[in-house]
Length: 392
Ligand SMILES: *Cc1c(COP(=O)(O)O)cnc(C)c1O
Image (cartoon, rainbow, N blue to C red; front, side):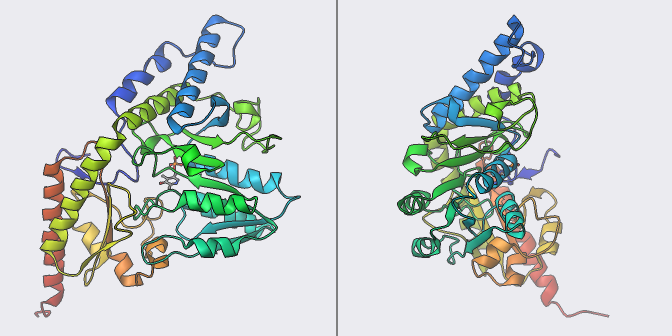
């Protein structure tokens, strides 16, 4: 990153917090033994550190015990593990799964893969704020429904879904609920019992830990649910996910969640204020700038704004010094209109001319003001260029 770059893409990835790096370093250079090598002292030390990290993650989420936490390489793997696992584990009960249209590709693609292989999938729609309708969810449940997958907060708009209400509706029909909380952890006060979910996904690099670590919460049930492994091998992570555990990553995730828990209340207030300042300056500076997503039910640091009468690609190209995205980070290599905004009823051309601005722990007021000024300048310039008749 250049020195003057303004980073407003925290929903795509966050820098590591120096406190997280400090906590993980000894597990790269000193406690490096394989946690499975429990026949020797260094291995037992590594094992103890891994289980301590697991316990910390569990406590941060409000779980009863660390046995409910499986470490994965990230949220994508956790989503794949639970979604294909449930489908396989529950085939005798039914083959119908319910989700909604603005889920992350790491939820939609595994489910669509199942659909191509004989499972039935219902993708319910969202309203203009990006929220599902609970009556529509309720109506979609059938006797052969085995799972509902509903994200906590959307990565593009920050819209927060009514997960607790959805869990209660699903549970009344004896259906389990999975929640991709990659964007909620550390931004909202989060508690597994309060959300009443059965499975929950998180990602390290969205909460100031490194890329390549994540976790899946699996609620303990009686009798225990027998999920098939996502990766077969030596039987690590309770047999669900083989491969030598990423100990330094697990320690980092644990530390990151500890910090998030301590700071979430004050930090969410600060971010909401900065976000409102950013939106206020942009909407005051240019006409026809529309904020997408919910006003009340939204992540504090996320803003998604559509600019009428400008070309989205031209706008991005004219802002090389402001790191933002259009659509999700994963789809921004294509220049298609964001399916998330389209599902909310935003017209295609306008959806293409939308910026996702996501703020985080190291965002300053000065950066917000500079970014707002740059965006206002470029939108105004592009509109003027467009209006000016071609001279020969
Ligand atoms: C980033 C993100 C993911 C993917 O997380 P990885 O750890 O990068 O695999 C999944 N879901 C949501 C909502 C995300 O924002």
